[in-house]
Amino acid sequence: MSSLGNSTNIFWHECPVGKPDKQKLLQQKGCVVWITGLSGSGKSTLACSIGRELHSRGKLSYVLDGDNLRHGLNKDLGFKAEDRAENIRRVGEVAKLFADAGLICIASLISPYRRDRDACRSLLPVASFIEVFMNMPLEVCEKRDAKGLYKLAREGKIKGFTGIDDPYEPPLNCEIEIQQHHGICPAPNVMAGQVVSYLEEKGFLHA
Image: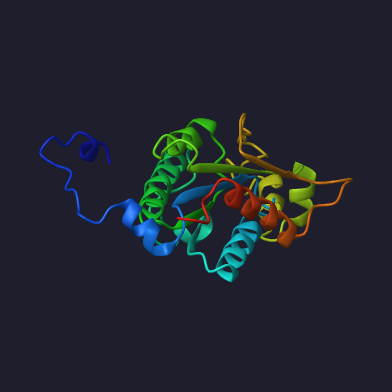
């Protein structure tokens, strides 16, 4: 990984069909919707709901799910700090390519470290990285525990689990924050509607 970053004999090749051409074809603007939050906060549910809503509007999107990517692109990475950073770096670069192709890329990852998320933001033009913070209390996420991971972490069978013995650094200036209202989590379609409305307002659903 390090040797690649130091390569000096590589050159960027421009293609005649650029991002504006692709966006005109798709009648939308490419961007990255980056959903971050604790395990069990509802990131994947929201990502798929956004994708479904965009599809119903005739808009092309693609979901990059953190768990799914570890079955292929990132299957060689563990959960040490340096592996987590490389995991996010790879996803950020892939998301950038999707956005360059004119798609609305929806990335759904815990992405616990602020510096890694900010590094992904820096890859894209200003305003084309929309950070969505699933601000759900730890006790709510732990109560859901659909994968049984919190239980294993509490028993010491999983080390470095975000929210238990590894930190989660919440966004400082996210574009969208989703949280409970009166102790109740919004329905998936309501949360997705909030994000899609933002995309509409900012002009991403039109060429």
